[in-house]
Amino acid sequence: MAKFVVLDHPLIQHKMTIIRNKEIGTKVFREMVNEIAMLMAYEVTRDMPLEDVEVETPITTTIKKKLAGKKLAVVPILRAGLGMVDGIVNMIPAARIGHIGMYRDEETLEPVEYFVKLPEDIDQREVLIVDPMLATGGSANMAIDALKKRGAKFIKLVVLVSAPEGVKAVQAAHPDVDIYTAALDEGLNENGYIVPGLGDAGDRLFGTK
Ligand SMILES: O=P(O)(O)OC[C@H]1O[C@H](OP(=O)(O)OP(=O)(O)O)[C@H](O)[C@@H]1O
Ligand SMILES: O=c1cc[nH]c(=O)[nH]1
Ligand SMILES: [Mg+2]
Image 1 (cartoon, rainbow, N blue to C red):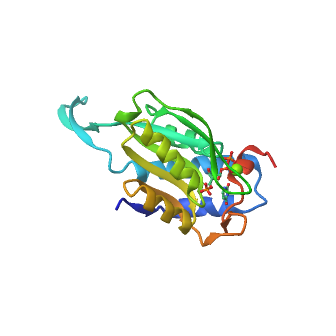
Image 2 (tube, rainbow, N blue to C red):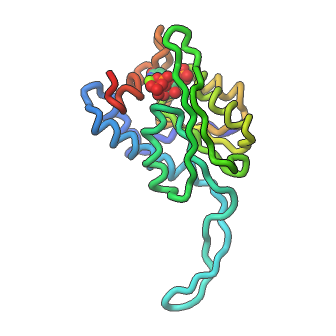
Image 3 (cartoon, rainbow, N blue to C red):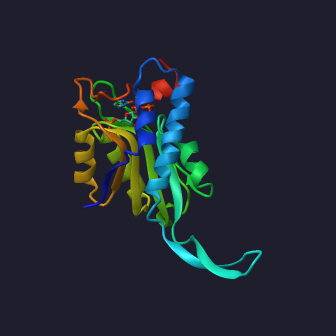
């Protein structure tokens, strides 16, 4: 079974509490989502392989480490996942960015895919799928399917708030995918929203409601 990690660093917990507050406006919400994503990137990339490199300091020549191995792709699930991209790319500027467009049908809660554009060499990259919300898990599972269909083999899912139902659904469908979350909440309400959650992440990021 792949990893399931709750990234509960005090800075992350503090910023999560700020964005859960319904009175917080779009500007602060956006800033906090990016900052949390940046802090998460630090832990999510902890297992990146390193290799030796010779470096000449002003004093001497020495062997030190540099990043090696697979390159990264960050793939937000539109729309809300876009809110996490800048934060992660700040930490990993060479990462390529793919996009998967998906919305959840309000009645059935089933995801509907409307856009996929990925780096051509996605099969050789480690992929970080980013989305603030993992609710039923339908969207994440469909995004992982879309990536695997196009050859992606090394996939991590990075979310801010997850419901136990969504975590179980992803683990059942994709036991090879590591899940990193900033918070594991209580569950889903009758409309499929995470409780206590933070509401509709896309609408809060883009001010559409
Ligand atoms: O786990 P699930 O039950 O599939 O729900 C989670 C999905 O719902 C939200 O997107 P939404 O459909 O609201 O689209 P948006 O990002 O355009 O607002 C969220 O950003 C996830 O993608
Ligand atoms: O709580 C939820 C569930 C799905 N999508 C959201 O944006 N929020
Ligand atoms: Mg939404």
